[in-house]
Structure formats: structure tokens, C-alpha cells
Image (tube, rainbow over all chains, first blue to last red; front, side, top):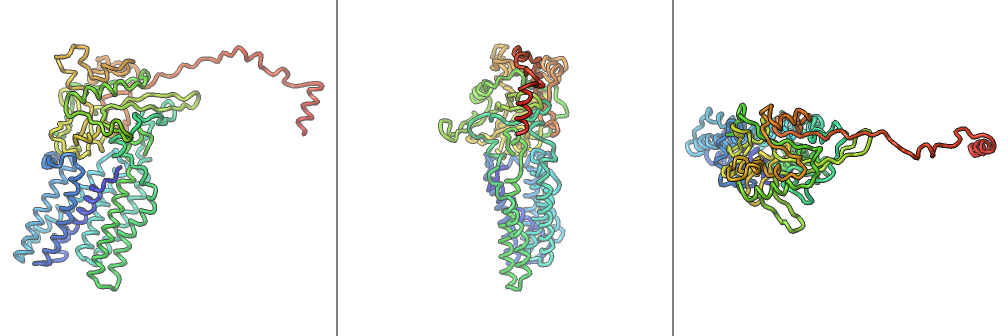
Length: 291
Length: 248
């Protein structure tokens, strides 16, 4: 799949933003006044910034409101509802903390649940697609939610909890890669089943339908960037999990270490998300003899 | 609505004969011509006269080489367009309701004024039947020439999809695949019409007729008897020469 920067930015930033909102909603940490304002501002910048980035890849962003209509079947529509719900509930909850010094725990818990539901819906947009076997597995939502929780815990300054969540997110990430690498093969979809010609013999794409490129090839067949996948996986894991863990445990100034850890974590998730798209093979590629 | 109908009254679709298709791409051009001038946004081209030429097409013809275990490889031309699936994954993923499957005839269509161009339906389609038009920013797909097949302003013989009307080899057939007695259904039954990627559970309406088995003729070679070795087991001088050369 084509790793579009708008979608990578969207899933990375809003994932961490909603993760932070979830922790704020649960009262980890309990903040009020200006400190609460700062925390909520960061969370909203990340979550809303990510959502805005996602509209850049739309052909007609001015019609985006229509995307709320099909929540009965479409995960994209459900995501829109969950995101708006989370932002509104957490907005009321945050306003109470910032301006009235008032904590409404139930509202916060609902907001936290809606925030994580948003991340879950985002992941299901990918996980539902049978056409991309690497995404079409339960590990995809587990990966998105665990990364969101780890990033949220890190930004919330949750200390030991952040360490545990970072570690488990790292394990999920490794499992996702190991299992993901086998998915296309195990899906049973081949150029033979795609063309229905397998009963005659082995099938090879002889001529594409045209001499140039097309939408399908640029959107679904990203082959070039997979060259350095193994190195990028190590880089992603290092930036996303190892560096933040070392920084948090280091004896430096805690706030400074936390900021640095958050920055490397964000960069690592970006790399991981790039791989998430670049390594995903859409079965339409089989018609072109590509993966 | 993006909820798929339980059943459709008819299942209009195409039957494509891979045995007959000669790979001339006339259906591709005819499709582009009709659909750029009629229903919905035109099918745009980008840099049509330059190096990186690309454009939106609703029908494309691939060519595959199939190598049997014994015998020569076969070249098979393979036209591919929307299969108007019964369980169309492109419809249910649509967040706006722009994509829908019609109850009356099963055609899968896009309401372009509702399409936000998110591309998710193209992601959900395993066949590459949907293309986002680069200049209009909306999703384009085969309409089964919905503006031809019911068009009473056209002569009756023209009320079929443009690709079917144009095919010089008669490799494309149009009809109701929900009706067991229709010509297309009988063709499918007779020739063993097949689904593409059946394992994905999309239940395509369009069917493909596999190439007929190649003829196998007994080899007739009039020179063969004359070319047989004269002596299988040489004797005399030739026998000595054979043994000596063998030893060297």
C-alpha cells in the first residue's frame, strides 16, 4: 500500500493524542487549572491535528460531514462518531478541570472509553480489509490500541505504568511483524485464484493493461520502499520502545527525559506506521504480477 | 445506504469468454468513450501525451502466460472490470452512503455528489475495479452502462453495455445471471463459468469462461522412419571403432 504521509501523520498523532486523553479521563494524573490546560492542549493538538491531516487525502474534504451517516456498516463512519464523541465529552470534562477545578470522574471515564474506541475504530478500518491479508487480523487493533496506550502513558508521565505499556506495545509490534509476514501466503490468494487459470498451469503476468502507471498501481503496489524493511523495523523498535524506556529510567531531569522520550517515541511510531502501509500487500497487485 | 440488499430482483452482469477474447482492447476504448461523455464525471487523463501518462479506466485488459505441465505456454487475454458482487465489500465500507447496490438489478453504483473521495472502497475491492479520478476527486467504476441498458432513445440492439456492443470477437455477454434460463446463465452452466478470487467471499455476479482445452493431435512425422539409426548394435569395423572410441 502507498504510505501516504497524511494517513501516517493522522494515525500516529491522533493515536497518541487519544491515548493521552484516555489517561487524562482516568485521572492519571489528576491535574487542574493551568497544568490541566497544558495537558489538554497537547492532547487536543495531537488528536485534532491528526484528524485534520486525515482530511488532506480526501478528494472532496468539503463533504466530510456526510461521513457520519453510515455508522451501521462503515468503520470510517464509526470512527468519525467516536472521535467527535470523545472530543466533546473530554472537552466538557477538561473545561471542568481547567476553569472550575471540578473533576467529574464518570464523565472522564466515558471520555476515556470513547478515546480508546476511536483508536479501535481507526484500526478496524484497516483490519476489516480482506484484500490486505497483513492487516486482516486481530493483532492490528491490538497493535494500534497498545501503541496508543503506551504513547498516552508516556505523555501523561505515568512512570512505571508507561514502562510496562511500552514494553508490551513492543512485544505486540514484534508479534504483528512475525505473524504479518506469513499472512499473504496463508490467505490462499494467488495469481492462480485471482485469474482462475490455475487449473491449466502456472500463471505469469505477461503484459499489463497499459504502458504507463495508474491509480491502482500507485495506491496499492508500493514495492520500492520495502528494501530496507528489516533495518527500519529495528529503528522503529529502538525509537519507539528502547529509547523511551532508557530515557525514563535514566537519572537525568525527569521532565526533560520525558519530553525527549515522547519525541523519540513519536518518531518511532511514525516509522512503524510507514512500514505498516509500505509492507502491506493488496491482493490487486497479483493481477499485475506484483506484491 | 451502504447496507447490502438481502437479495436483488435481477442480477445483471457480464460473462467474459477467456477462450474467445483476442486482447484487442476495443472494449477498453469503447468503455472510456461512452463513460467519459455520459453518466457522471468524465474519466480524466493525466499527461496523456507525455512521459508519465495515466488516466481513469473502468475496464482494463491484462494478458497472462499460463504454462501447463506438458506442452506449450498459452497466452490468455483477461479483461477486468467491476464484477457487481452480491457481497460487495466496497459498498459496506463507504462512510457516506455514496456507494450502493441496486435492489432492482444488482448494479453497484456510486452517487458522485455524495462521494468524499476517501478511497476506502477501492481498498476494499480485491479486483481493482474502482479508480479514484485524479481530476474530479471522486470514485469511478463500471456502471454496467446503466445509461444505455434502459435507454429507450437508443435502438434496441444498442441497449447493452458499451464493451459488449463493441467486442468484435463476441467474447463479452450481458444478461441476468439471477435467471437460470437466461442465455448468459446457460452459457455459464455449459462452459463452467468461474468466480475470481472465490476465497474472498465477495460472490461476484460476473463470471469468466475458462479457455477451452487445447487440441492434442497425434504427432505425424513422415521423416521419422528415415532418420532411425541404421545399426543399433554395430558389428565388424564399426563395432571395433565404437569400442575403441569408448575406451579413450
